[in-house]
Length: 153
Image 1 (tube, rainbow, N blue to C red):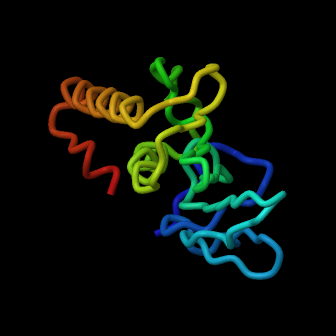
Image 2: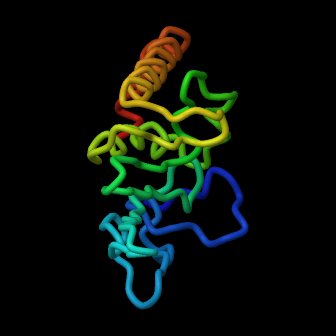
């Protein structure tokens, strides 16, 4: 089943299980979705780029700096804040919901998460996930009989 894009986007939708006919993004020659891109070396520093599917936006990627114990992943976790309305204006709510678990799969101590001016921690990601879980439970109270976690699968 092919679903329409929830939010119009000027670029073509990225290939996901929900959008199998969409073109996959390209970096140089060949790119396989959901697999890390090659590690870059810039000025002697290693930088690992990966796209694990759409979340906040269709093109939001994970940028890992292994030599600095740091992950850069923007606009999903808001360190010290709750998401603004509409889950940070996310294009893909299911991807947005699953993205913090993917971020936690990386080895890091420092998370550069975006606009809020402080470096996030793994605990910040845990707080974000708890908040999102509470929203899901609260929505379930307002919509009895709806299995919201099943909608994420």
